[in-house]
Structure formats: structure tokens, C-alpha cells
Image (cartoon, rainbow over all chains, first blue to last red):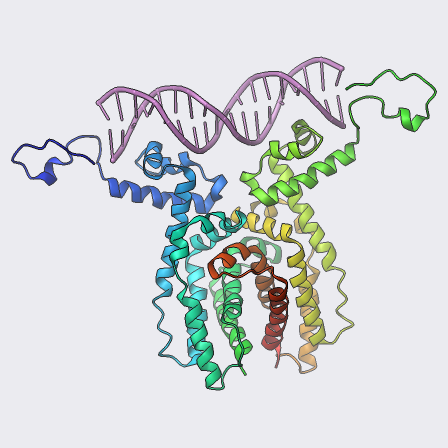
Length: 225
Length: 225
DNA sequence: GTCTATAATAAGATAGAC
DNA sequence: GTCTATCTTATTATAGAC
């Protein structure tokens, strides 16, 4: 980074990159590594992932990975933080307070469903983390700092629903969230074994829509007074 | 270590093992390897597991693993088959036809719940398999040959329930099974990340009982006419 | 900041004696 | 059938030039 001893009358931006091979782009390089690391870790798991394999995918050499991230484990942690971060950012974009309780639940469930359906990478990295007993999630302050708006939002809907006599009283938001998450997560995380054992193609569009409606109805029936 | 050359008047059973070190017991050795392989693969995953680590746990040396199983992958497949086999054997011991539809569903759900709760090893190996896209499950004829009595049993209950006007018509057994399985599986498979993110101890006995009742009620409400 | 080369070690698999 | 020793390859990580 230290580009000392500039003395000429040339714009600094132009003289800054005269040195080496193809291109020098620190931020891009780091970003590229992280991007390909996601692919590798998500596909191969933590122990299955190969630092070489990540390096091979990029223009950059393996040396850069250690230059920017220090170790394979640290790179994995950053992959974890990136994927968790993406998720949390989208969760905040739900506007549920404007809707009636039933519609709000529907939207929340469908959002959760679509969300897991679209983010297989996230589902896989969470599965991988659980194989490691969430050791790295526990270690990451960044992930701890991401607060869960989803439970608050759900709690608020349940409260309103109970007030209006639509839902039962005494429902625990966390339990309801567990009910929703488990279905949305499992049909993605376990689609390979479940699909093989029961000979069903879970990602099939028609089946997907059926299951999307199903979990919505199921949750509503559970909540209803 | 070799205590050869016993020549005296000793009973045959005692003289039968005069050769080598501690003991020679082929079947026991193979069984021991498989038992410890389960522990290692379940804890570390396929790529994380070390053949050395398995060998270290047993009296036997690493050589024996290759002698009996040929390769690490083959050993993994046998672990997979063993854990899947154990599951299927217990599934057949449910007697649901004697019960009314509602009670039968309750028992089936509670059985599935307890089953996953008690067999963390199975849950973990299935998670691991899904990370590998169920590649080894697909490869195993033994697992393919294990037929799923559970879907038939569930279908039968749904049919009876609909006949008696207790359940809705047109319910798909596989969908209901997905609903049940996802909850029972997820609360075990994802207990580490879910517990950390939401600060809850899923294995806690009181919480467990609450969730056990919850999934039962939830499924029943979904089925009811 | 990026490259090539390489150290250090770990891991799957095998040889060969007993 | 079991043991010790070892081959071979892969893998994380680092050195050092440019």
C-alpha cells in the first residue's frame, strides 16, 4: 500500500499502477477470494475445502489467501459472516406492521420459505456449521452483533392477532419461528436424502408451490383460536 | 508379545488362542472398527474423519481397517448403512392400525420426535450425507432395499381418518411426513446454530416436552376437517 | 501486492514379517 | 489376522524475489 517517493507532475491515480503483471487491485482481489471461498466451502465443507482449489479458481495465487486472510479457518469465518449478513439484511425489509395478523403471518412464512429456497448456500453453510457444533458462529462477534428482527416482528404479529381474537393467547414467538424455519430449512437442506429415499423431486416447481401453501396453512391453523 | 510354543496338557479352548498378542477375534475386530468409525464420521464428517483417529481408538491398528473395509469411503458407506438400518428396524415396531386416527397420528409424531431426539448420530450422518448431495446413499443398494413402511402406515391412517370424517380428504402422506420430519429433524440437526442465535437450549427437558406436544398438535390441526 | 518455489507435515494406502 | 514400518501424495502454510 505504501507508494512513497512520488515526485513528478503526473496525476497520482495514473502513476499508482505502473508496476506488475495483469492488474493490481487489492479490494477486488480480496473480494474475489471471498467469493470463490464461498463456493468452495459451501460445496465441500470446512475440512473438505481446499485452499488450492480456491486459488485455482481465481487469477490470483494461493499466496494471496494467506496474505489477506491469514488462515483457512479465518477465511471460513469470513464466509460464514458474509452469508449470515446477507440474510439479516433482507429480513429487515419486511413491512409487516401494515398488514392484518393473518396476512402478516402469510407473508412472513412465504418470505421465509422463498428465502431458504433462494439461498441454498446459506442453508448449506448453516448445516456445515452444525456439524461443527456451531463452533465458529459462537466465535464470531460479528454474527452475535446481528440482531434478530424476525422474532420481534413475529411476536408483534402474534400479540395483535391475540388482541383481535384471531389467534390463541400464550403462543411463544420462538416456538412458532422454529415451526416455520424447520420446514423451510429442511426441504432445502435434506432434499437429497429425502428425495432419494422417497423418490420425490423437492425442487420441482409444482411441488414447491404446494409445499409453500402447505406450510402457510399449517402455521395459520396452529395459531388460530 | 508373542507367547508361542505352548506344549502342555491344557484344554483345547484355552490352547486355541496361543498365537499372537492380546487376542485374535476377527468378527469382534471388524465390529469394533465399525463402531468407532461411527463415532469418528459422525463427529468429523467424511472429509474431517481420519483413518488414523479411528485406528487409535481401538486396540487394532490402522492396517486392519484396510484389511476389512478396503478404503475410507467404503467404511463410510458401511457406517451409513448401519445407521440407516437401525432406524428402519425400529420404524417397523409401531402398531398403529389398532388405534383411532387421531391417536395413531399422535403416536406416530411422538415416535418420530423421540426417535430423532435419541438418535443424534443418525441425524448427523444424514446431514453429512446431504452436504455430499446424498452421493453415497444413492450408491448404496442396501439402503435402497430398505423399504419405508412409514409412508404406508401414514397413508393408511389418513385414509381411515378421512373415512371417519375426522380428517380432510386429499391429504398427501408424503407431505404430512415432510411436515413431521422437518420439525423433528431440525430441532436436533440445527440445535447448535439455532440455540446460539436465539439463545435457547433446545435439548432442555422442559422445552423438549413443549415442542413434542407442539408438533403433535400442529400436525393434528393441519389434518383436521 | 503479487508471483514462484518450497518447507513441513499430515493422511490415505500398502509392503512384508510373523 | 495382526503388527510395524513406509510409500506417495496432498495440503496447509511460509520464504523471498520482484
